[in-house]
Length: 219
Image (cartoon, rainbow, N blue to C red):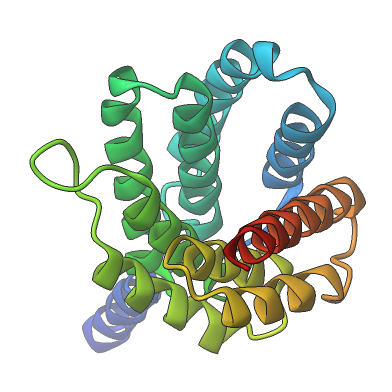
């Protein structure tokens, strides 16, 4: 029979275990979200994006509900919601954008290093793409802070470099943007994410072409 002291120690150890910080985990459910997101974004016609992403966002919410302490579940819900908002492309997207921001912030709160800090990159992207106050929460200074953090946590990442380059392009810092786009193009491949990597490299090439047109027209 356990003594009272032994029972108290076991209870304390149980409480300590429950209080351990939650971790990030790319499991089978999240891998499926990643693959379906890439398929929608890079293989479907843009006219089909809104309906497909709406359905995927519901699936991401269900995954997050069953994994509330998994930072990557919140991260991918945020990513999918931000892409869905882009597909909506109007004032109707504002509530979805705010939901995306909340999901990404929650991911950081649980584990700021989840997926090597990807939530910082996607939060930064929201802040430079959405309208400024009073319409929404857009803010270029805040965007830069988040994007900088994403680059510092994962300096060779294809997404971190692509979105940082796109931000710099919108700021008309073409030389810096060009370097970042090129870094995205030659970024290391991510295991199991070939479709997403190929699509993002094409995005980066399109970004370089936009810079080229701007600089050609300048002279």
